[in-house]
Image 1 (tube, one colour):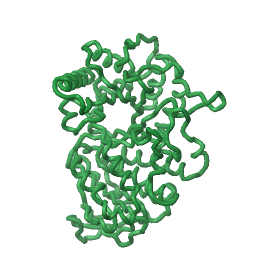
Image 2 (tube, one colour; image 1 turned 30 degrees about the vertical axis):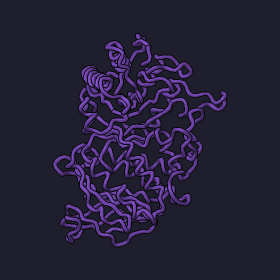
Image 3 (cartoon, one colour; image 1 turned 180 degrees about the vertical axis):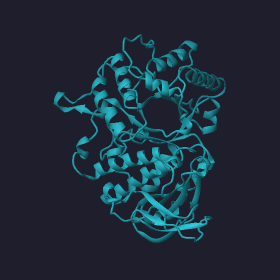
Image 4 (cartoon, one colour; image 1 turned 90 degrees about the vertical axis):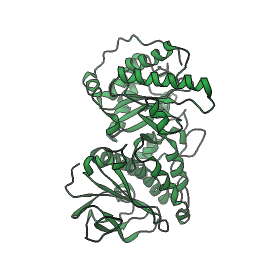
Length: 448
């Protein structure tokens, strides 16, 4: 752990109301959508030797961008070699400048998470220093590196005892803040040490493998999007499309999608829709929202010019904003995130046509949502999906909408349920499934 002392700052915090509300939060039952950012390459100043922005400059750009797109939190990645929470880097500014950035994010209603913290089991002083720094910087959460598989025996027991104490102290000192375990072998192991959530990176690797496959061959890899999710429903996971997929010169997410340019964007829309519709909290690495074409590089800015005109990149940004909006507004998509009662499969058997469907439910079964995915470029007319109730079902989201860069195929805003049983439900909808598209349906006038 970095030896930097807890700051004795002169910063005058302006977030008293925000911190008061934070103390009453129950993160496990709330929508959490995290924008993960590397400050040094978020945006640069080309007129000044391409220098990175200072913390106070970032305070003008970052809250507006993440807030406008509907994220609930920002996770700040530390610079290489720094594992202690909230250590200021000189070319961005001082610790007071960093506090000003946190204050600005809180002022926009955005929580602040420190990423990639590794605790050093050298004694109680080091543990206390980490908690004190998080408290001093008004942290909303922290992502902690879980002890690796190389740690065994007494060494592992010592590391796990440290993590348990850290979680206990942080939750006592910062009520409403949460901790995320990165690299935990399973959610149960992390929960036993007091973590609120676990990073689910297997989600990312499975879907990248599936969506990088030619749609014709997806029928033989159907289990990548069905079997695995059956084992993680009800678990405290963060579905992460994170920096881990971008490091080491890896191609961008867009480049890893299958097909021509149109299909790549359509597949990427499917990836994002799955991330938001499946149970679990959400994390997006910066640049994902604009469908960055180049791979990540720590020494250059994101390609903001891609969204300066009415391009596919701007339309992808519209989709991310809409996904955040519906995820936060519709209780079925977050209220029972960590309960098996909040999710049920409707159809996992249609491997031949690469179609899946599932239902999300809010507390007490209210605010049902039915989500259907077509993972082929072939539109599916007259496709019947079971639903729990009669009446008119609105098409609340269609990733194939022209506004998002799609072909505009769908269900004209909604469908009337027929008394035709399907998928174990008493009613069903006769749907048009757009090519490489996802649709979200909800009963008309349902509680949000």
